[in-house]
Image (cartoon, rainbow, N blue to C red):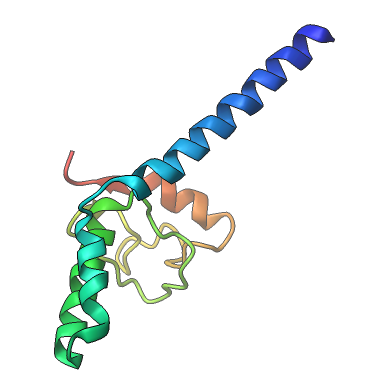
Length: 116
């Protein structure tokens, strides 16, 4: 029992350290280009604000490692430039909406990264 508690304690400590470092280190790094965009936003004109938001969207698309599978896309429209294998009207192996069970799992088994 003592062995299991020591292992569990070490696991919790390691998890806490990893999450803490992953949260704080990026926020303490100077010179973030996103911070510069956000600093410009309040004083920018409407057209410039739209351009700034489009740049932020590009950072999100390029740098955030998340595949949004919980949106209600139900009309076979996907961005296929980087990810392939989506259901299509010609190949409807699953409902196009990614949150329908069990089709969400089927969707995740079929999509692939085209850049690799």
